[in-house]
Image (cartoon, rainbow, N blue to C red; front, top):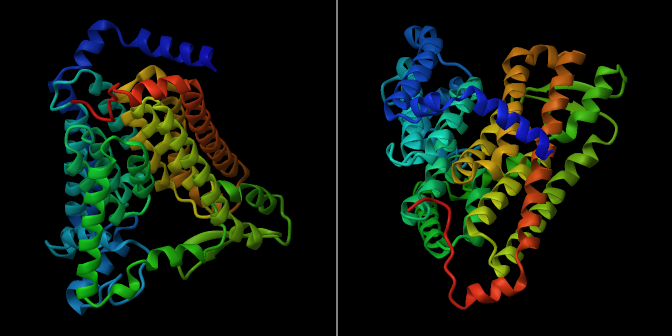
Length: 438
């Protein structure tokens, strides 16, 4: 594996001559690259913007916003909702200019948060280490743009990047960003869990997160919707195996092979494709407890590393990647936007130590390309059981398992390589450095 990564690095850095690297590390070049990518995004969205239409999940978001603003029927307050209540903030904000401007305002929100993430990664252009990570973020955003521009993950991913980078020098701001992201889409809770488990700023983060969450609960209670505050959890627990989830892959192949008791079908109630076949109901019930077992094992490993005083920055990022990876691999629900759960951690990892994080970087690039090929390029053939489309899905899901395996093994190696005597010495006065750059 190391030889393959060395070969990939040699090819990459052979193409990036010192002159080209200097050019890429110029603030002016980064700004131009950022603007160029977002101009391409704008041009792709322009037909929808000019006609007042919306794409992806935005039709549903716009309907929810209109129901609240016009009919005073608020999801998560008046009715059960699939998302945490904080998702209402961007969903309603995009509607303040009226339904015809919804697509444009959503794009501008995404662009603004991406700009903040790039600015933070490079410390406003002053940190040379952040340029590589900033370009990586822009590249992955471009590859995953069919979902990143049209889903809530396109907003939460840059929030998580910014929060992780600011953790050491602005822990309250970082905690606020991570908490806000969690109340928009639940996946950043895994990153938050890693932070409050091993970060030296965990007390500040925990108090800030608890205070913000208490404020959210209080506002929902005052609005009369406290009974729906955690409804997004129960709505997910009742779902069957979804088409794109890694665990579903064997049954997708059974459906492709023509087995009569296995089928890909449309769940019209929640607008998603699911798979039914022998044993799928039992597996769907087992996945959530299995996921929590894996999460508990990862947390135990992180706590051992904390006790031994393993490198806190690596411990946090590897733990976060393992937790988020487990959320995806052991989830009975799977969607293309889930890849944006992994991207922020990989990007911040690349900013801290490229050589240590090059394996997940290359894996993330391959996973992102395959994901965009699956959706939207080959999605309809996939639903129809086309073998090539299913092969793409299988390759992507295998790489997700490899990513999870790499992160857990790297975490275990980090903990194992930290001598117990080092932990004692550190407790006697050695200083540790958290994620983020002072």
